[in-house]
Amino acid sequence: MDRKQQFDQLVSLRRELEEKANSYWQSYSDYTTWQFWLILAFILVPLVVLYFRIDRRKIFLLGFFGYSVHVIAAYVDALGVRKSWWDYPYIAIPQLPASISIDGALVPVYFILLYQWCLSHKKNYWLYGTLSALGFTFIFKPILIWLDLFELYTNWFVLLAAYLFVTYVAKVITDIFIKMSKQSRET
Picture 1: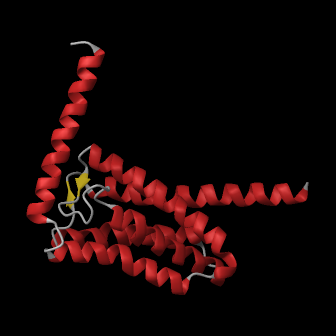
Picture 2 (picture 1 turned 90 degrees about the horizontal axis):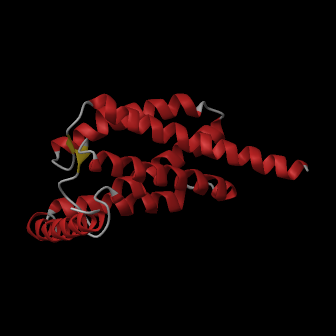
């Protein structure tokens, strides 16, 4: 089998998988289930809270940081799903990644508000970010497992490493951009 045939076969398998995923969603995860509504709340409630709680004087800094958390979390989560380290049995919107409610809203909003609090109260983000990653790994995800909203197929430390990676890399990227911005003002 040549490259083109193999690639076409992969595309065909993806289409078949998409059809099966849509059928699964209609059977187990559509708007008639409580899981759908809880997942939808994971998207909407954090965004409403953020709207009222974000410090508008620092909105671009906080927004940049939150966007960094969102993008990194989405990539890390996609890797975890692709490698079968974890997955989500229920999906709010089948055309989007299953973790959109967590990676697109809940986690970024939490970390935006944590970063805002650390800045406002001169607290150590690295410490509180680490504690938060531990909380998401060993408290939040077990609750999701108990609710049957998350499946973990690897060990807990892979999940912890993923949360720590998101927590630290978003901060490092933000710090680099802050430093570059300050340097540009000095010249």
